Length: 184
Ligand code: FNR
Image 1 (tube, rainbow, N blue to C red):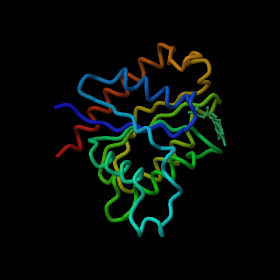
Image 2 (spheres, helix red, strand yellow):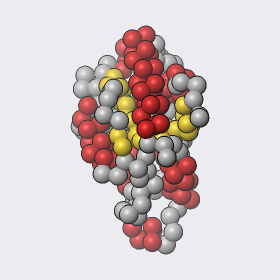
Image 3 (cartoon, rainbow, N blue to C red):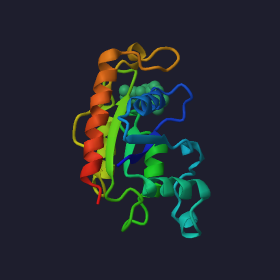
């Protein structure tokens, strides 16, 4: 049975390593894991409970619908100041309401990340896991922690480092199994 995965990269930058990483995951995914990238992160306004109470803005509704429809969620996060970029956390905050039924509630999720630095997005991934763990099933391992991204991606944003590509392929195979565990 094919699985539908919603992918999101937590960066608005055109040359984003994390968007390139998500794109590579789309290419390397096993045949039964169909990953669609959510491309409207920039349209999601700052979370505002007053605005929410009047009806969520259309881009937020599209984001929540895409989450609800997915069998699983794949997030590629940058690390900003040892945490999750505000734009990604903001989108999660919208999706987490109402608290009794978050749009990603009960979903299997996998996190990966890339940075030009040496910290490999470890702290951002921990922060993201903490924000999501309450309501979803975040895959504990394997992890995709990419340091020195400038050495692993080429100028066109292609992930060229072969060991990293192989690791990503294994990670996606594990994620397929993880998602199947939670299918009812
Ligand atoms: C960064 N960057 C960064 N990198 C890191 O490894 N740890 C960090 O704490 C931070 N902090 C940070 C804060 C802010 C405000 C910016 C703009 C950047 C660098 C960051 O990893 C780099 O810009 C990446 O290229 C961002 O990911 P994308 O856009 O390439 O996906």
